[in-house]
Amino acid sequence: MNDDLLLQRLLDGTLTPTEQVEINQRLRVDIGLREQLREIAEQAMVMGDLARLRDTCIPASFPEATDKGVSFTHWLALAASVALLAASAWFWNGRRELPVLTLMDSSGSIAWSHGGDLRQSVADGDQLSAGTLETIGETATAQLAFADGTLITLSGESELSFSEEGQKRLLLRKGSLSAQVKPQPRGRPMLVRTPSAEAEVVGTVFNLSTRPDDTLLKVDEGLVKLRRLADDSSIEVPAKNSAVASLDSALKLDSAITPEPLTNWRFDFTTTIPPNDWRGDSNGNHMMASPYVASRKSSGSIITHFGVCVRPSQLTPALSLIATAQSVIRFRVRQNEAKPLQLMLLTSKSSGGYGGNFEAKIAPDELRADADGWCELAVPIRALRPLSPRHPSPVGNVLASVLLSSFQIDTKLAVTQFELKSAPQP
Picture 1 (cartoon, rainbow, N blue to C red):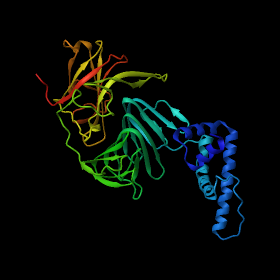
Picture 2: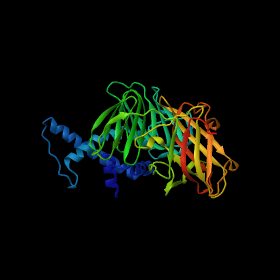
Picture 3: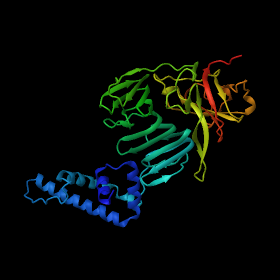
Picture 4: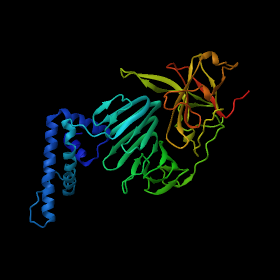
């Protein structure tokens, strides 16, 4: 793509996110490209002045466009974008933006980017200006706070772009978030967009997940307006209700009462195919562990684990599991070689919001295989340890994700059954 077209698309606002990053980086160091952009902007301003003269009925002669592919209307669009360029000129001059969000609590690898700037990691307490935050890996989480006390929590492999210029605007490109939204100013609701839907929020507690073909909304408190982008239809989803906005506009857009969380539930991989959003590779009558980013070293290199993940909320219809003091998590598993395993719980509060992550490590001598190599693994909820003192116990929390993994070594971990029981078995 030549530079003229690239700059034209910059002014039009039609660049892809990758192209936007690339041109921002070039404009920082390429004086010639900045001069070229300035010339285009000046031409657009001239055309804007001519348009204003025409609107006030002052006679003026309008030059013919030298490029037949660029119409007068297009030049007016360029003129309208000059104000945006002027407002953002500070970016190339190195001026710092005001913070939008504060990272309150996190685990795992977190990355924040703004324009061409990329910070591989951020720390609790960091204030972040408008940009994009990624939680990298199945067990990563990030709780973020706006100045008004609104809380946003990302979990798992998620990517969220955010800004606040008189109105909170979020773009969840992938993954899941939960939100506790303070009452928003009249006429300026918080907007959360995904590839398939947009949620309009004035003050509520909800969970939102984007999947390849749809968006799942679960409202705990208040009311959320959900718009399906495929056909621009919309519904209002009240408290204790859920809705799915699909890319397929032929499907009915409707809300339904969210089922009460279960304390006992079983999934048998030998008889049921799990959703694509669950971690692991379906292999006949079991799930095989697949690699994921567990953490990132200070050098930037990553640590890979191999795991199988159960996400009840990604089922259709969705359901939720809740931990009690008597809960036991059971798996039927097999490995090619006896190695330690790690059980991770990612949880949310039953009333909505982040509930913390919890971990249990299983030593090889706890895995007693039968003649076929299969082991019955049982982990009481009391054996799980919190990863943060802010969230001391999973009891009473909803299990957003249950992840069983081997450490850095692919042991060909296979799972045929998962079960949550409310009381230990003899």
